[in-house]
Length: 482
Image (cartoon, rainbow, N blue to C red; front, top):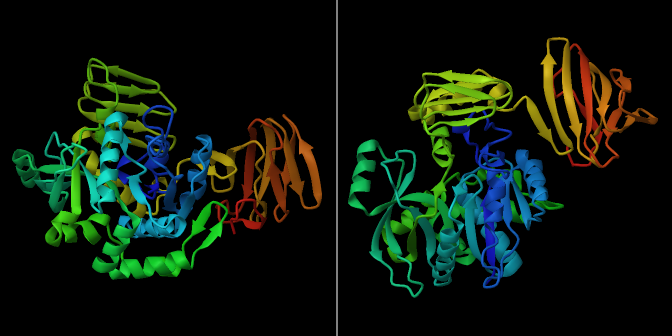
């Protein structure tokens, strides 16, 4: 039976602010090495290809992030089966239901391997051994998850209560599941650790698509019904698959654990299996988790960027653009991004989400966007702005072009600093080379294109009575944006 990797890439990662933001969350960040968390997850989908027939991965993400997903797949030369676009996240149970319908429709049935896109796994050998064992269990109609051996009473994770060892020919220890507990208090977490029968919930699941559909229809028929409608009424747009918005948003928002697994653990324990694993797993949920996974100096510090430390220990300090100095600090997190600075006690990093909540309450853009904003054609960086002008550094990737557009309230002046541009101004089309410029008056249709093989870089100066990004009328667009 074919293996169908399913990657859930819709998380928000608010506790990794200021680097993780709503429009550029943590799964798209390079936190460890050259690849992002999403790319690391994609690289784990092709294991033991000589033994298993493995499908190209199915990715489920928020529509807002579709071009980020596509670009990061392209960088890896990965062609996903589909990129399913959720109009709004409804948690993991509806997402897995959509994935199961896709697997049944395309393959008749499949063993789904569901992985969050924003986790880190360091021991790939042990991970692949566990996947092979999970595949064997799933073939026997088990719903399988991985349990992480806890090393501390962590209150930010879910816990799995393991009972009754399952005898199986593959040899790895496997247990039935008696209960799921989501983020217990400190006293309960300590009791779980002391008992030796509890594992952290990894959020990784392996099961037949048909078995999942049978259980979700039986245990949560509204998710089954509305997700079926959303998938059947959806539409293809190249590699993207858009779910029907009204039907999908009518589905209850629920996790795999609550919608199915917890209910089964109360009535049909013999259908559930947990494999305890030691795979160097982390959900990379908070900055203290990132610090634990990084290589640190003799003082226990992780220092990245232009950082100077004096008499400081056990700190995580990351600077993206300027000199950051720490003196006499212990157990601190300092993250300096292009437009925001975070200083936090490493033991309080769970509470960073409260800062994001306050930013949202006050309608602050720092919870949504970085100063550098990625677009399907490249990126722009807002260098300077006031009420009447804004200066941007715009990068257009080779062979890409912006939409044919017009603005009602602003004019633009373009200066090419690297590369060659093709410029459209109403009916006029002309080439613009380095150190050349052009002016785009208010109300003029215009377009910028990079015909070259290297990135095009321009400086754009906007001026006018209103400089918001919503002052744009698109007439043509290569990326299907309205």
